Length: 112
Length: 113
Image (cartoon, rainbow over all chains, first blue to last red; front, side):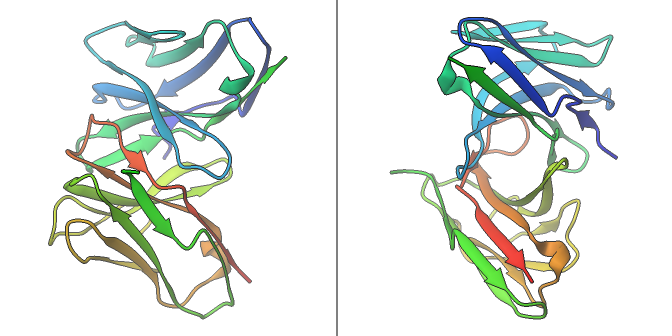
């Protein structure tokens, strides 16, 4: 039962353009969402988060948008850089099970 | 450098062998976690320890045991390895559970043949 879904396994974008990574969730009790970034042979690192009381959170080139009615969030990277090439995981804390639910990840490739 | 340290980085086991994956953090975090990452599955929680002296099962605990040795160390043991346990294992820690971002180790790539 995947409560957090990332339906696009991969995304390729040209350097300087916008990257949009999408995430859907099924559990309406989720009240906080996080994005992690993972390079090969490294562990995931926290990137940006958003509380369910907000619909947007921005940190430099990274912006996360939350649409609660659609149970959908997206991560925008503008402008995209080759160093952004990594796997991005969407995640949400499951208060009931004390677990962090992760999506399957989207591999972003930014081409020079 | 402060963070989460996992050993070993790579391991190949034969079916039925046992091994222990080690994890240590030096950030004085209370909560520690073991995840496995499989293609197309994201990260799934195996076991966690909310605080020193406590451990609880996660989503996929079968075939594993854990020990919270002290506040710094949280080990994961495979008593009798199976090919289905071939995966990349990540240890993580956080000061408080839930909303706060986890700090992950660099992972252990385990292959069971």
